[in-house]
Amino acid sequence: MNCYEQNVPPVREARLKVGDTFGGGVQELLTCCREGCLLQKNRSFWQAGSCMMNGAMMMAATVEKSAVVVHSPGGCAAQMHFLSFQTSKGMSRRGKPNVPVPWLSTNLTEADVIGGGEQKLRDTIRRADEAFRPEIIFVVNTCAPAIIGDDVEEVVRQARLEVSADVVSLHCPGFKSRVFASAYDMFYHGLLRGLALSPKAWTDYRPIDDNDPAAALKWQQYEYQKAHTVNVWNATSIGSDDEKEIERLLSALGLAVRFYAEYSSRDELRQVSEAALNVSMCDVHDDYILKFLEEKFGTPYVIAGMPVGFRHTREWLLAVARPLGLEKEANALADCEEKLAREAIAPFADIVRGKRVLMYGGAVRVGVEATVMAELGLEVLGIRTYHYDEGADEVFEDVKRVTPKSVVSISTQLFEMTHQVKTLKPDLVIAHNGTQGYMAKLGVVSVQLFDSDKAFFGYAGLYQILRRIAFEFKNTSYRDRLSRHIRLPYRQTYFEGDTFRYIKN
Ligand code: SF4
Image 1 (tube, rainbow, N blue to C red):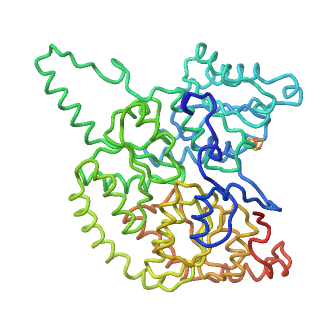
Image 2: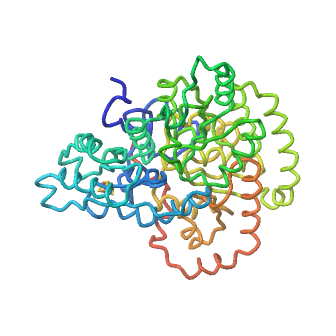
Image 3: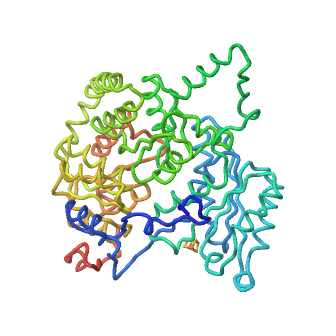
């Protein structure tokens, strides 16, 4: 039985060479990942961890006309307050109805943990169906029911016979994986097991009657359309402006572009099989579903890094264009776009050149962006990534070539980041969103590595990030003054030791 046939998918630790703890050089990281020692690394002190359930819920909340049922004690679903706001904004930026995603928690109590929570789950799914009439109900399975052994899959199977919505189970108890990226696989596993990913006759299309004199022409039209359509797989960190930039570039090659799976509806998801190519925008995000779609529908896929900066955008465009026979056009497009963009970024490139930068974020995005910055003349002191798996090897081979002296850290730990900021003394930090407040307290100029309200991909993205960096250097007085008046929760002696002192091999 392959993993797509199992009720519960494997976590990344079981599927890939992966790790969340490392400090050292780029070559050391690549060797450590290949030899499998990354998984053995640990810390003697953890400040915080991440929960993959949050990631799965974050993706589910973006699906149009869905409802989320979180099978958990009350606390696990707390993030939905924030997610609901974020996803309704994402919907409206994509021209979709701006409605908050309905969500319910089974609110398991001590008595439920002793006696089992299956009945509560059954009732909550029914309630979600009756009250909100969603097209899809995502059932999120968390730590407590997974530990007590609630048969969530059986409850979901029975619910499918009773409710009008499609019911999709997401098995993502946080304790099962230390790697947040496991969430992507859990979400995609739920989709591929719980939804139809190909169109229904008479609902989505009128079948072609082979006795129709125009049948041959209709088949040709269908084949042509499919051959010129690509599915591009997005992520929560990829904003609508990024999607617009990618659509602009691929449309210039004559392709129709559909974005999946976030901000899609059930009807749109049924069109997944109707494309010539599935294209990833991040090496460590989509391989699970893209391999499934190749196996199930024979649709080839492309995983070719992230379209950030001149070189990577050209390589990504060429990787998409190659299987479609559009390589020449893609090169011509990149030549034209680069010429325009080089003129546009020239004033900012002069300001950022020579700056010393520390970078922090998801493995692929931070690795690719680090090479872009290094090629623009910045000195990349360090690269911090939340997790690392073998999917990012190609990106980090490139990092090794472009900026071999950068220190690489795999860490979700803020105390290690603070140590690096204090000891490496960067002029600039380019970091994951949510960290800008800490950077301001440390008195360092910082910009976000991604922001779902702005573009980072393609030529527009390069222009925008450089403009933001240049803007941040114009006036640093707020950060300078704030850092003089903030007391950090660390003793000075902490900064005198090694950043990675708590890492155990
Ligand atoms: S780790 Fe478990 S209990 Fe904690 S939020 Fe995640 S699913 Fe809930």
